[in-house]
Length: 405
Ligand code: CA
Image: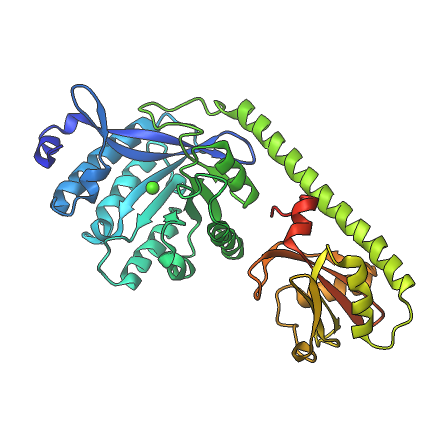
């Protein structure tokens, strides 16, 4: 595809629209506008044209302009709450301080496309200018109601610092890398962290490149409110019926919810059975003179369940040695005594919960710092000031089927 062919044939430069669906209503809430070029026998993406650094910027701006004009002309007919996601390269946008783009949007405002329906997907990939200049422009745009999205999240984590500065309205997370259930746990954890960050800064999560039901489930489970991808809708020249996926999404979400509830019920039941089991064991081994002695008693009963146990007080100071299962032997590790664990996430929250409810707690899944294994910890109030911690082995959790997040 030659750049000049395209520039001399702007009639065949057209917008395509990819629908974006919402989790709360299962309907189309917006479209991402994508540039296409119609040849005599096919439709080609203009992606390579825009990415090509050999093509002068004014050519790209012209093509951008044509795609957007045609798209907005069409979008006039849409419901007045449908969002329009527009991709813009920061470098191209800043050429004229973003004025042409803004004036164009304003000219469509009187035709019924209010600016608070515009979501600017800003790409800083080629941006060479100062980021505070760009930030000023985005702040200015926002005074008109334009929303800002950062896309391709998940494929490039270097954006993390920029997220804090831009405080985007929408974070678009790319699920391309999540193509199979075997995708590394690490990657899933990174996405989980992004979802936590989005929650903290009040950004809406949009998961894109959803191509399989598994990715949709992942997006749903990780706080995704908006979804986009071939699994839901291929980009098209026309707008679609907003309710096109309503029934299928509803049914699929029903499956996700059932599955999740079943899993959570399993975790709840395991917590309850631990509660009675540990209570019973503490009754049985009432007579101990040191916590180490108690832990040694417990290893007799919990040998296939745990790989590490210890006792902490309510401020997180370790009151016992560690008892640790090395191969098939339990060994005491004295150097852990008196260490403080109050800095660990959720530690004090969990202590307060146990103290108030007088019940044990099963933690979420996490990677053990020392063994690297995926584990959960069961903690239990021993008395009014000390708490027993039982790190559960991977094999046991696997057998109980409560390993999944
Ligand atoms: Ca995009």
